[in-house]
Image (tube, rainbow, N blue to C red; front, side, top):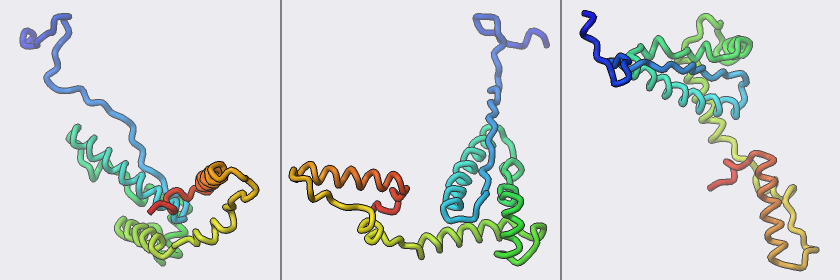
Length: 161
């Protein structure tokens, strides 16, 4: 059987099967119960699941065994509080479906129900410099101040239509 291997021009053995490349893919942690943290976690979790699906497709590994559970993605103290006060149960009795449903419901409802008072916000924080006599300069300053305000407050997503 020693003579059955094929070699390339350098004398190296040609591999019939690709060598797997493993990358450490860590599941995102949910460490806060705020809307922003949950939305960020949902996006990171979706990316994590997509990368794991690809890895499992390449390696033949079982996706259900490779994925970290949603329950394990929670900060230990946070899951205790969420289990007790949101789901009215113990950590041991909480299921994956309950957690996923709760997160999706909370982010969907909060995002639908929460509409910030942008008009009042801009009225308080954004002023046009009427002392500037050059109209073009006045308008450009206003837009620059607007951009800086959006950058500082992180309201980029809220102001887009």
